[in-house]
Image (cartoon, rainbow, N blue to C red; front, side, top):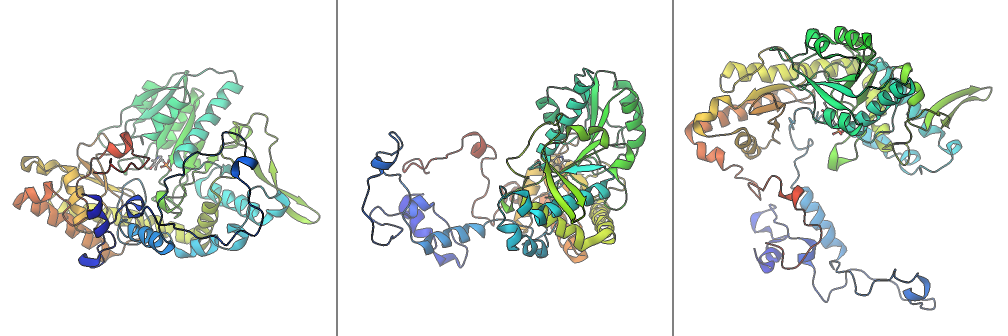
Length: 509
Ligand SMILES: *Cc1c(COP(=O)(O)O)cnc(C)c1O
C-alpha cells in the first residue's frame, strides 16, 4: 500500500465506521506543528547553556505532527480493532478472561488510591496499607495459606518468588538440592521458573486419565529434589485428586510443594490448596480475581506461603501493629533471610484495590457460586460438543473450569486447529487457546468462565458446530479464514522475532 493510499484510507468512512488506520507517522505532514505554546515571557536560554554536554540532540526528533483531535481519533479507532471481554465471550483457556465488574474500576479511581504516591511515608498511606493487609488476609483465607505477599507483578514472577523462597529454605538448612519435579501437564512457566532458579527439571508423566499418580511421583522422588510444582486444576482442566498423597511423598523426603494457583476459578470456596499440602503458591489477580489482563492493565501475582517459609518473604512486609491508639500498618524490612525486593514499590497497587473490591462484593457465598458456575459452564460446553460428535474429546470426563476438544476429526479435510480458531473470529469470538496443553495434539482449550449466560454459551457452541459443518462442506473457506477482519493471516511470529521499533519512511510495505 502506498503512503497516499494509507492516508486516504485512514479515517475514511467509505466503509461506514469500519475505518482503516495509517500510522501516526504516515498521517503527519512536514510543515505542520502539532502543538502551540504561549509566547515566552522570561529571558530565552539555549538548551546547551543549561544541560550537560552531550545531552542535547543535534537534529530534531522526527515526531509525527498532528492535532489533538487527530491523535485522539487515531487511538480511539485503533481501540475498536481490539477483541475484549466487554465485546463478547473470550474463551481463552487457562487465561480466565472473566468479566471485570465496573464497580472495581470505580473503587480503584477513588482519589485516595489513584492519587497516592508509592513513596509517601507509611504514616500517610495507612488506608492503602490497610487494604493490602486485608487483601492478603482474604487471599490466605481463600487458599488455606498462612501469609501472602502482594509484590509479584505477574503469575510468572509469583512463581519466581515462590521457587526462590523454596531455594532459600533449603540453602538456609544447608541442604543442597538440584532438581524440581514437574508433571507433563504443567503450564510452560513452571519449567521456566525452575530453570531460572538453577534447578534441572524432572518431568513426571500424568496417567491415562490425565492426572498425576502418587506412584509416578514416588518413583521420581529423591533427596536431591527441592520440590514439585503442580498446577491444580491442571492444564487439562482436571482436578489433581491425589494432591494430598503426592504432598506426603514429597514432604517425606524433605521436598516442598509448589502449587500453581493461577486458575483458582474452579475451586474457590470448595477446596483450599493449603489444606492439600501445598507449601507455597501464586494467585493471578488478573485471572481469578477479575482485574484486567495485559493491555487492559498490569498483572498481579501474589504468593501465599506456609509459615515455614515466612523468614524468606520478599521485603518490605506489610504488618499490622496494634497499640493503645488503634491499629497501624507498617512496612517491615527486618527479614535478614528475605529473598529481597521483587518490585520497585508495593507491586501493581491498582490491581489490589480491584481484587479487594471483587472479593468483598462477592463474599464467601458469591465466590463459591462463581466456582460452581465456572465449572457448570465448562461442562455444559463439553457435553454439547460431545453430543454433537463434531469434535474429538480427548479426555471424556467431568472437567473443572475449562474443557479440551481437538481437531482430530478434520485431518482428512486438511483443516487444522489454527484454521478453526481463525474462523471463530469471523463468528465474532476471540479464539480459545490452541495447541495447548502440549500433550493433546490439535487441542482447543475452552474456558467460558462464569460470566456467560446460557444463551451466550449456546451461541458460541452453535458457532463451533457451524464451523465443523463448513469444514466438511467448504474446507477452503475455513483454511483461509478470517474473512471479516481488516487483516487476515498475519505472520504468527515475525512481530516478536523482527520487531520494527523505529519507523522508517521506506520500510513500510
Ligand atoms: C497464566 C498462568 C501462569 C502465568 O501467569 P502470568 O501472569 O501470565 O505470568 C502460570 N501458570 C498458569 C497455570 C497460568 O494459567
